[in-house]
Length: 243
Image (cartoon, rainbow, N blue to C red):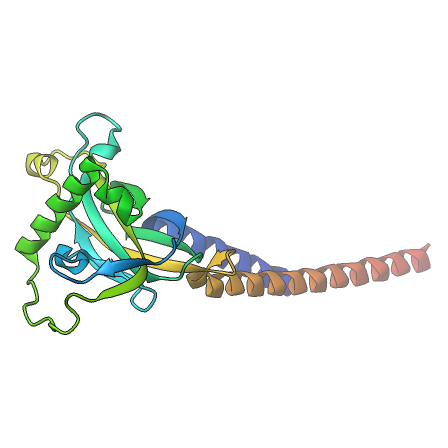
């Protein structure tokens, strides 16, 4: 009975951890493959002049806040506030996952789309959205003025993508101010490469934990079955002697 109790505790803890994970945060993600490298001009105006939040394999996460609004029509989440993120220095052909993580206490719907640079430059609607966001960033972020002039005019090759995040508030409250002007939602933006194209690298420890829990549960169940079989054989032998 002691072994059975331990097994029940293990399963209960596993279920509790899963429940807490769902209760603490929400996740929206998009999966893509990095394109071929392209020459990126460094002369003004350059890609860096957009002052976009930037994720790279060496700096794969950012904690920030994103503006949001209520959709103009019910469930019209595509009309949300647009935020743009630059993914730089990707590895050609590598599979990646981009995630937006936010607290469940800030109900929000995110619509994610990934674009290559040429697609954005050739689509008036996208370039206008990108320009509007970039201008808003110039008002919020200090523009560096001490850039090296040695790299200006040179080109670099890189695999680059742009992520468009459209954010819509998804709640109802009696507070008229919050209904008119939703507060920004605090998010973690994460760039996660896939390991062998099968699983996001950040999930490998979690997968290992699940395998460990499964192995322990299997060993415990074998022990329980073995003890139950021993009890059954002993009981059967006693009954035969009594008969």
